[in-house]
Image (tube, rainbow, N blue to C red; front, top):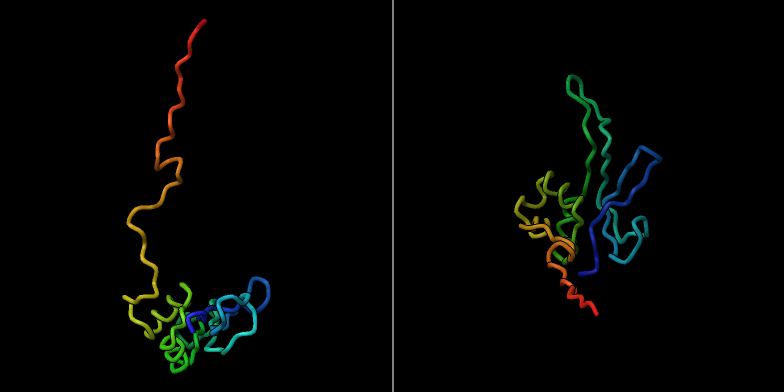
Length: 123
């Protein structure tokens, strides 16, 4: 099951995205047929409760997400961050990419270019 990813499938209309959290084979397209729908995420704050600001909608099936993680499915970075915010996976988890200590530079910057033989002889 290592070929399965937990990722967001985009729905909605232009400028009003709405996402489904899905378990899907890694080779499939973003909106391909998922194995299972695990939840929904609406990034636009719309839910209002009297006296509080609008909130984003995040709903998911914790049992099914735990199952997919237990069989080796890998969440994408956006899904990992959502699951961390929701308390499903801990802050220091193995799915979150660590920032590299030193950025990789292009080869032209990291290694000096060889100096061409500049000896010119006059005849």
